[in-house]
Length: 213
Image (cartoon, rainbow, N blue to C red; front, top):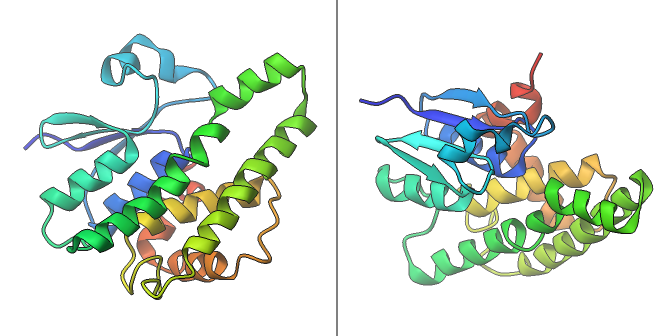
């Protein structure tokens, strides 16, 4: 069987999500770091893996997969009883909606390439960068907090088993903390993240657990 390889960057939110999923499955894999700050994502060898020049990329089952949520759904569909998404259509929609609210609405606007371009256009410095991050992440997480005000929310974002929405939420809160986003009023978000952070899979996937020495 072909070796499973994760091409990622230790602080990438999208990579963090996939590491949580892999750790939740106790899957053995090899990490190949891609130095985003050094622009290694645009090197020919990485562009050959992912023409978008993004991480993560997962080589698994003899194929090369991109896009973190698509990777997580692939693992959900090919590994028995992962529970990453519920079995019912309504539940699957809700988990996808929560995941997309983070991975498609908050995260892309805070991507390094996007923020760097904003800084270049505006001539802004680190203060402008921090204000941008606080605004986008803060507004986005407040919307997620409202979405969690739902009977389907349990110990985790959906029910009492961690799934794809939790895999997205925890990395985003990690980023919120990095940028000094105020989260004191996000009671459900903070409660769920605290529960997740106590689990071995989330601990193993944390950036501090995989960052370069």
